[in-house]
Length: 277
Ligand code: C2E
Ligand code: CA
Ligand code: CA
Ligand code: CA
Image (cartoon, rainbow, N blue to C red; front, top):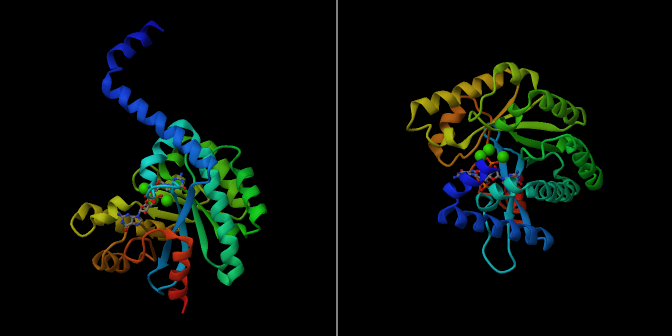
């Protein structure tokens, strides 16, 4: 306790007080936002660049306060993760995304796949039950749901990861490794985890045209993923040049502003209609 007291004196300066205050106020507003149902889900299309077809969409949370502009996840996800509120928030997103998928399946779009981000704190023993309940309540087919889990989260506790992924895979869900390339997974685990998709982190795709290192990393991931029979998705595609590079390397699926930013459900429907006819 003495040790703690001393370090508090040393570090608890004005800047830190400000930071803590800010964090507390964000935490309080997240709670309020959850109570008031102010979180919405936006959708970003995932496209097969060889046949031009829409493969599915990623659900991305947005905070839409009653009065005020849309808040991006960078503003509140870190605090939600620190405080554990991400569990409630993630559950809300999962529920909203499944309910939306139900509506779209009823419209005849049941072949699309809904991808939902799962944070480290949600990736624990009760996740399977949570997901099973969300599937049951929405009535959507398990194979229309994909969970995106970051490489870092997966590598935290290999034993638990294998257990959880096998349960989820056994239920018929698809699993994607998100932000691939930023963590430390080995080929061994890529083979051992029952995953179906690798999502190449946007930081590599961003610089493929100007950084040979990044270009090499991206083409290596594509080849490796395909050798392991995985879907490979490149994130953050914005330009014709990036698209041409990825196509040339045989990357089948992409996501990015080139096709669409994440948009509210109604706007996503317009995108689907334009894309299907
Ligand atoms: P992420 O899972 O890697 O999601 C991709 C992010 O890249 C999204 O940012 C998306 O808008 C952005 N993006 C997609 N294409 C492009 C592009 O071409 N250019 C650029 N510059 N950006 C692009 P967003 O929606 O702001 O989300 C940021 C992060 O917040 C996500 O990264 C994810 O880690 C987290 N997040 C968002 N929604 C959820 C959620 O429901 N649950 C959890 N746990 N995390 C979420
Ligand atoms: Ca993601
Ligand atoms: Ca990602
Ligand atoms: Ca990311």
